[in-house]
Image (cartoon, rainbow, N blue to C red; front, top):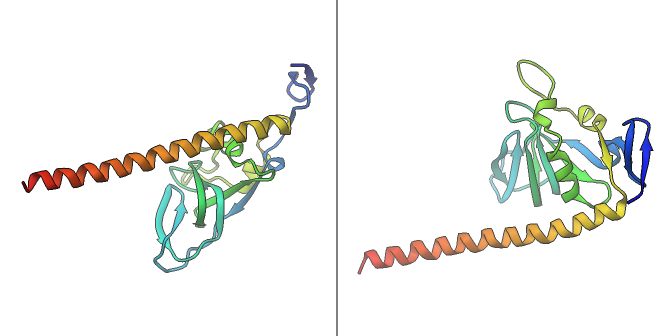
Length: 177
């Protein structure tokens, strides 16, 4: 495709693409203190799911570990969840969370953390990271393909879980014969 010179990068990039802050692409929000109630919605902390509660404060987002050794860890969350105060939620501003997830995963966020004793990632740090942003039609094409791939991946995981369940059932029945 056609290229154009980008002054900030001092090199050519595809025409129509831009060099901008992540805040132009993704909305970041800090998590909240979790309520004390057992339930069905996963609670995401700095290193993934820490428990399940009855309430949710986000839906269809990317959870980012905010503090500790695993800060910068990314979790793709489909459905409702609670983002704790040890995590940050990220959601694409143009309905392309898969593209946002892969953009974030390419940035090695753990290496960008601040602090020496306890590594920390903040909204300000995330908002200020500069990235190349493709044209919207490219992002939407990527999103469409990624959604199909991940739906197939999730179905495969469900099938494997079901097959494992059936295998265990059959083995237990064979053991009693």
